[in-house]
Length: 416
Image (cartoon, rainbow, N blue to C red; front, side):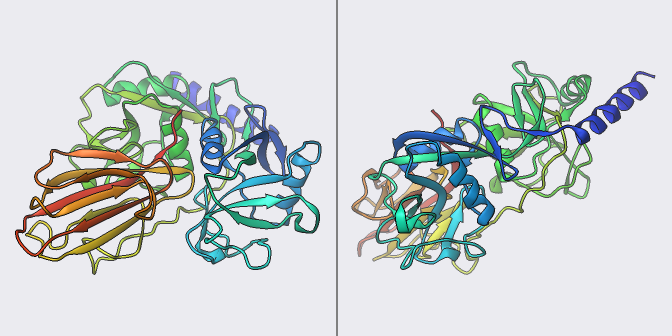
């Protein structure tokens, strides 16, 4: 009887949400079916992204003329004239400029000024509201230029929950419970253990969850595939590549930055082991989200030595790993992620000859600040970039050799 009552109440709530208007949270304004908020304080691109992420938001994206008009409306009554966009260009081609919300590139729609994008001027992009350049997009250096910015959130439905995002409410437990009890407690509030359907939703959860390990609503089947306990579609997967097998039947998510399981990744866990957990319940109707864009390293070059730009997540190793590398190696590894993230690089194994050196730079050139330079035998260690790029170099001399190194890189959100 109680179960039938709960199901009936859920149906009533669902129908009510269907008829409820779209709203914005955190003081954002509803324009063109998205939530926008202008910050007139002038900061660099990295600081702007960090500020937006504190709301679970991204820098504003522009996918059509209506989005351009929405931005114009937001800035009309302000003194803002130059606005950072949530767009990062890896090359001087709109197809190589990726939106922070993981929806893809600017190839299908762009409003770059003539001769732009131009990565020689900078990898980040701003929108001008001045004179003949009004509405045009211009390339600019991400760190040295200061300007205003607009943050963007998806719409949702009115609810008194603290964490209301894209039509759903989220609750982060402060106590640890086994899987069955955790799901029971979520059901008591007319929800389930959380299902996650996009990189943006995963990032939102990662932003607001305290650093820990949380049970989520994924369960392994006997055929080693995964499904969501709430019966929603399995359309997004962020299992840790190093733990993408069924060790146990339940699944947890890491939000710990300095952890063997990178923050944001999912992994198998014992269903009877108590852990904190995340509940999710409808606040309205879930909006449609774009499929995430994944760039995989070339299988023909498993070490990724001199493989060009590598998008997170991925693995880099010394050539021929785990066997010995060769003399006179000269490798570069260019690591990148979307503009709204940093890179976490974790060396799990490291053994080189004394004069064979690995150097990690906080940027894409050897002129960038050096994060670490090491050789010999090292214990596992981790490094984090200050922006969304990192360069690793490896050189060996003509004498001794060793097994080399194995490292994983992943994206992490900006945390204040």
